[in-house]
Length: 139
Image (cartoon, rainbow, N blue to C red; front, side, top):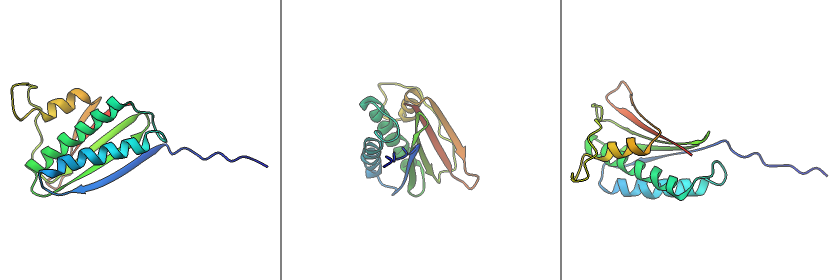
């Protein structure tokens, strides 16, 4: 009798559609945390701090998308290859600007925090009036 080992999935992905509403940032936090906690043992071991960083990044990107977009947004999460990728697609035509990370400001720090936490931050234009903001964290 031969034992068969189950192949471990190399990547795990999920995509969520979120409405243009203030509650979407909180929903993104819950969805991201649940996804990363559920998949981390099968794909990539992650520390609680790494899960927290990815959750904060998802929340900030979704908050920006619903604040500046004309409709809802899509949140995509991927774990694998030693990285967590958080992508948020919205229909806002402009490119986001990274502001100064000022602890006294009440707003405008989101992308600066994302940039500080992420290994890489990219903005990809879709060519049809929208964009995808992608943050990659090493795990």
